[in-house]
Image 1 (tube, rainbow, N blue to C red):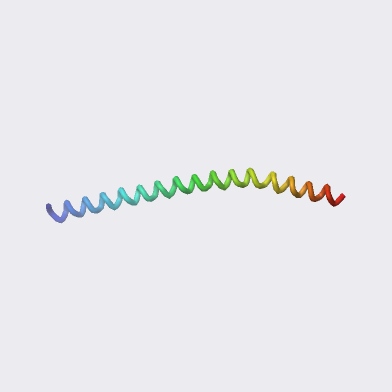
Image 2: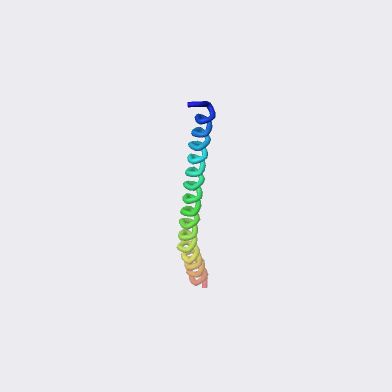
Length: 59
């Protein structure tokens, strides 16, 4: 094989691996976004209920 063919193969493999890593990173970013959204949807109503309960106990 010529050097040119080796370089083409090397660039192709490198590009493929970089695209795979970028895709995996984007998927993890979206997954983490969903987890944070679910966490805040569950936590904020609980915090509001706790503050309301504290206000009622003070009265």
